[in-house]
Image 1 (tube, helix red, strand yellow):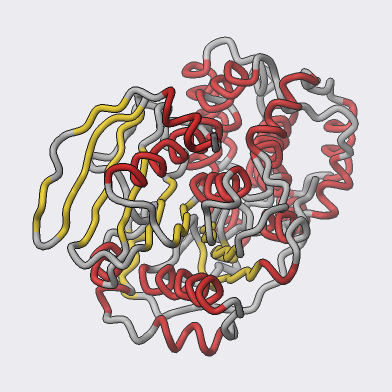
Image 2 (image 1 turned 180 degrees about the horizontal axis):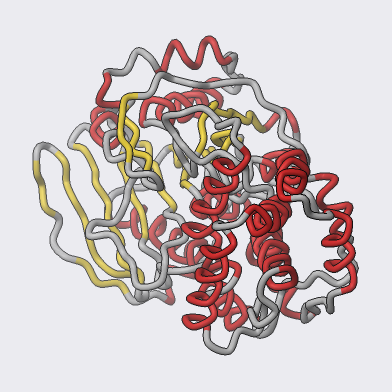
Length: 446
């Protein structure tokens, strides 16, 4: 029996009757504790797009299960005849790589039985869902025909939580020794304290310089605006970095996501024993911003790096570290072609793409970038264009041109409603011109 069949035999499945609206049949239900949603057009083309959602914050679930990163993409894909499916996962919040692979596999089995076995399955996802899509394709190489991983930490969970630890460790060492960065006793109180510390540090040049150093260890760029270019002002760049950290990395570094990871792993899977933070800074894409900030503040960068070198380290539990590597780190080995898509100013560092890309056979991968700040800040037009690159590779066996000129021309053919972008971090919306650009990210700092 296949892996899909084994899982299907063990699952508890409940479902509501399918609802047909506007020539689309909607299926909802629960498989082994995981809610799902499936939409199948009446003229189904036999192809399935299996969407993976990202890392939801504690307590949050969407009103309707996401079938695409941009809602505007759904009618286009249904109109092209694709069936759309997604699981909410039995563990929708926090790091859920293990549950995502299990529950998406189960949903694929359900689809085979209830709708029909697709002739083609493409899996895609955004943010943590981009990582989950890559992992799923490696677990099911003979069922998944192609992968689109968007703005994801595709170097893996160990790399992502390593970034968060390095950031949190620097803040603790240089600004607030009472903060906990591992084995956190009270995540809520610890996170509240971290937010207070960071807010106070932003008020002074010295505090901003030390925040810039901490942020640089995670390769968080000093640019998080989707509709504006990167500022040349040092303080403005550090504020943008830090706003992003407080919106995305806070739970990973000091709060519930970090604590939950240790519960899952049965111990602390991430440490920094042996890490030389001078070397980490030297490899960071934000090292120049750090040097500018320290000069502006009149602080001694060497003294702070020496303090980090002397600070007691966080030791990882070996068994927990092995668990995270096994469950949450793509090997790059597999059969399906892969497309990645990432803003070059994304705080979930595009450097992940360099690390992941080096694991994958070059003939199997194309990595696309848009010249924009912010996490997952690509438009529906850009995401649909990337998806068509993958489709063409799957269906013809050859990669189409991925020159920025061609991709921008294709994305700009979509109407303005497909090029609208809401900058959720800064509360600003607007129409964005397609911004595909050649980019060669550096490796992750460690």
